[in-house]
Image 1 (cartoon, rainbow, N blue to C red):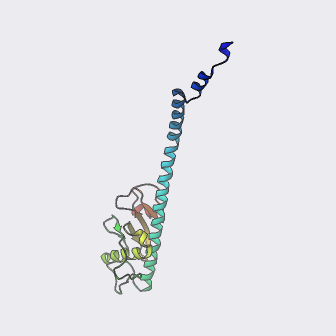
Image 2: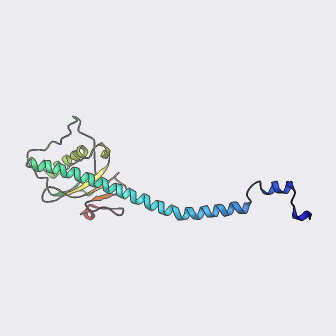
Image 3: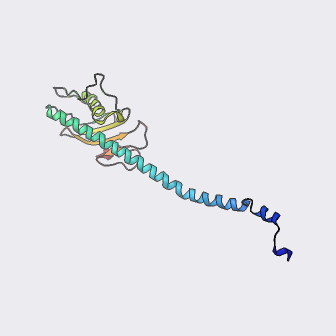
Length: 178
């Protein structure tokens, strides 16, 4: 009869904590859940960064389109080319020192070097200060309007956005954005 009932001392000892085996099982379950969840989270983060880069490329495209329209209205067509000609990126600088928010459109035909300078200024003005210090490349078609834009947060960024064709992987180029 004594074996059927445990004394108070034994009861307290048994209910005072988890056994080593229980802790190992819980840790194994948490490890399995983490192994399943982490790759999914990495994929979501990667996709959100690409979506953000594509959205920024569209903003630069729209800013460039506005500037091209201003040039056409002033009687100037931006030369058909890819800017920058080197195939790398152009860094977007700040607003002009005089604070002028309207890019000055030259009244004579524009060289490619002048166009690159004016394009950079126009993007800085039209896209806003959030784009200061970011990078882009734009291709101007024969009508004087943007055909394709790529954008990156910095010169070596893995997540490069494209517009009108959105980027879906790293190492995106202006040829893929067309």
